[in-house]
Image (cartoon, rainbow, N blue to C red; front, side):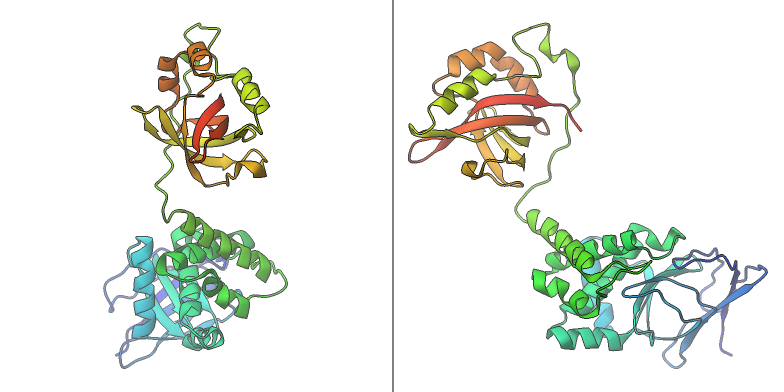
Length: 363
């Protein structure tokens, strides 16, 4: 006899749902009684199709699901392989059930406290045919996994534009990790995205921008190590020394002096900002992750670049370092410290050196 899993729950259920449960493999009936709605789930086997009756919602890729009854089929090996690849590169465990269904959509949802991904193989095949490769279907499946990862399916608030953008960003991020180009990561959305925004899904251009943002963020991590967290702000670092304060570690005089020589072999960026990521104490040099280029195109610095800068200004070393106290600078300029700075370069094989440093409080 075919076994069913029976669930009753409130009419107030919204798109991304979460229902309590009892489970016992494939033979246990589960019931929760309320006044109105009955959801009945029969999972498919090799010989029998499954079914969801009374289905209400889920986080859909291109629209909010409207079907009340959905026939379930066992997933194809192709999609299982794709999902396993996505999970491998995102560091996640496979803790959801996967079924195919004739829904013209892909859906992430929760039934009986278990995560489900439902997909229509016709939709995946169509998008792959339009783009000419399999990255489109990978993008759709990654998007639905992103909903589960972000907790959208248990929030009970249903699909909404902000959740969709988060899932789009995740798909862009993980597709970069898998080896897709930016165009390949965007291909499914180019095909299926709507030009107009709805109450549940953003317009295509916003979703493409989210995919691109995720792809770019993954790209930026390719050669970069993690940015260290900021060290504690310690107010008494000055030690009562009026010469040394958080306003000026190396003061404006050094900056002005070097800037005045601009055109005589040296030049100065205009007060960039960054985070110290590495320190070479022996050579008193610091690797800086750039968070603001100071608005100076001349500097050649770009946000997210990493540059090595020496503490010593060749012309102002004694005055500048002596004013602050080298030991104090070593205590302040540690990995994770945020600073505002200007620097110069000199020679045919340029060496960078600080002309000005200002300590910025942790954010």
